[in-house]
Image (cartoon, rainbow, N blue to C red; front, side, top):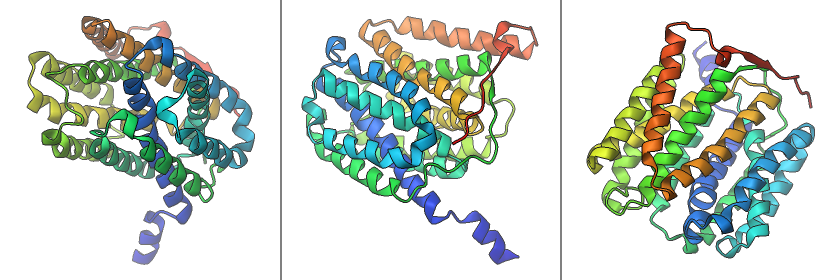
Length: 341
């Protein structure tokens, strides 16, 4: 019986390949698309706006690609590899295509997740790698973009991205969609603001690297252990208040502890919701990522961090209304037709 238990717990070769694929692509998003491209183009919206536009288009196209995802994934990553060879000097059309590729692959990878533990391990690898390499200047990250794309391409050949989920939910409430969007936006607003704050900048500074990594990992472990807790939404509001308060107070040490923990905790909470969704609702929720990233960047560039505090208050209000059981349209469930492929 003990041997059977160990065999059921240990991930298969396919799961390991998917773990590597997911970690490589998530790290690519963190170091190349989210921060590398933006930093290289000095946050000039006139130069980078085509990338989120491509991301949205890619998510829409992924609905069409869904039935043939096992065949498409290696080709998408091969094209990503080619474009990554000169990513730092990419023009608007190349950025648009990179956005399309990210929009296509992200929801397909999220749908492939059958085991939260594998996804959480992938997040851990991404956070460790991304934090350790963040000090490298954007213009010098080409080798990182090529290496991550190559690793993802090789892993995709063994990951069986066409695997079906055992069970899917095609009903998603407006409350779930709204809270996921607000969590993403609150994170984006703080991270983009923090990245442009000469005094409070954390990522890329050697004295905070290991603190950030440690509390990323602690956050992942705690969130995974608490994944079934019915009060996770309340915990996230409190955690975001702590992170925002640490930033506003100017305490870098506290922020280096709290904020990585918050990022890890809310990402696991989101993945726990997404891992049970059918493909169409998952794709719709995935649109939040690009929308939140863009609005977070606008808040940072416009020095409108007060607006982020207001949004945090809105999220807290939604939670209060839910707890006192006041019926709102946000509780309405949207049904999506299931997709097979």
